[in-house]
Image (cartoon, rainbow, N blue to C red; front, top):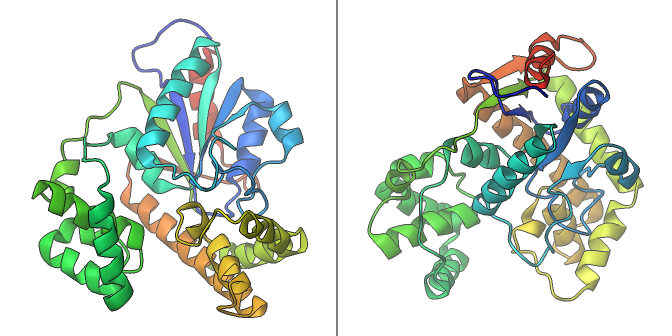
Amino acid sequence: MSGAHPSRPEAVLLAGPTCSGKTALALRLAEDFPVEIVSVDSAQVYRGMDIGTAKPPAEVRARVPHHLIDVCDPRDPYSAGRFRSDALELIAAIRSRGRIPLLVGGTMLYFRALVRGIAPLPTADPAIRARLEERATRAGWPALHAELAARDPVAAARIRPADGQRIQRALEVLELTGERLSDLQRHATPPAVRFAAFALKPADRAELYARIDARFAAMMEQGFLAEVQALRARGDLHGDLPSLRAVGYRQIWSCLAGERGLEEAVAAAQRASRQLAKRQLTWLRSESSFEAIGTLEDQQLGPIHRTLNLIAGH
């Protein structure tokens, strides 16, 4: 690539809902441009979680450099803050090699943390978290979500009533600091990196949902049940870990725990995957900085091609 240009992006973001073709498009772009792919996926970071995360196979990763895959053990949490730090280091390293960072995925919280920055927040307090867990066990997370809505309505509006991890964190911050998480997050500092952001936004929601259902069925045929059985057999993992609360893993884990039958678990996982896609599309609609582009099938890829050409200095 040629020297610095004041309006030239330094990295490209490619977001989209699950099963929208992000990986296929990224690999196609890698055929034409000197890109290295950085995964923006909160589950692909975990080792041993391959089938259920649709992780690119080893031969693909050998052909095109991939980053932030298999960097964490499932028993260890991986946060948006850690992602931001890792991603910014990788962007600098990739650019130093004269290549283009292409950040690809569907974890919208990670994209937000990267682009907008993260406010300095207090570290976790085990005692407070234990108390909140105990209350949730008695009353349920929706009840704690209602409490959060009364105390920090902006944060609550962004969090689903069943998302215990994020409800717990927002209430924990309130107790530790006396301030609302939404107020603290306004102090976030964006990074000094210029991004060009694109999004795959399938127009046919029914077709997307059909692909989601078919892909999960294919995952089961590829051995997803055995993958979750192997994780469970380790003996040091439990269903409340962030890794095992990932869509698909949570439902199959509950089946292995005897809480539901396999057929019911598969249907629940497919339903949760469709709900995830709906939330991802909602988030993308709210983010005007992400330019909608076509898929490989419709070949409306001019904007992202022009951007990559600009970065490459063509």
